[in-house]
Amino acid sequence: MSGSSPGPLSAIGVSIADSIAAHARLPPDQKNQRYVSISAAAVGWCAYLAPDAFALAGDWQTFGLWAGGSAIALLSTAAAFKAASGVRSWLTMLWRALLAATCLWLLWKRVYPDPREVVGFLVKGLYVGWLCANLARFLLAAGLWQGNALRTIERQLRRQNAPLRPVRRH
Image (tube, rainbow, N blue to C red):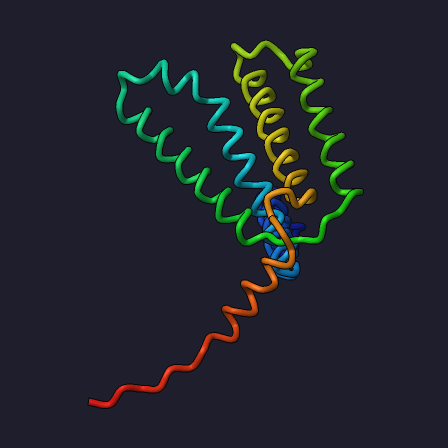
């Protein structure tokens, strides 16, 4: 049986390795945009799980796990927004707004199975996470948080051209 085709687990492993290699080949700005999407989706999941976490507030371990995960997700979102500086793209803004509107429509019309079941709970959480990821990428493409471009350039030039100070000898 050594000459047989690979099994399903090796096919899954190869596809995961291929996607990791594809991510490693991306330019830094596209990696940062993906980090923004992933961390914003994590914030969405934490917000979706918040009512359940507060219902379990008596169980401090579960609540602490949720609170820690939420804090890490918020911090990683802030760091990803800080690291991701991109060109303002109107087409990306439009596309992300349409995807976010689709998620809102799916949630509004309740296009998911019964949320009391596991599949419905996961599908609704997927919609919320996808909504948050698309809203974050919309804000990133809009560049609303970036501020004045001239101030950003001047700040970068000041950082790169710091004045030289002589070494003190004792």
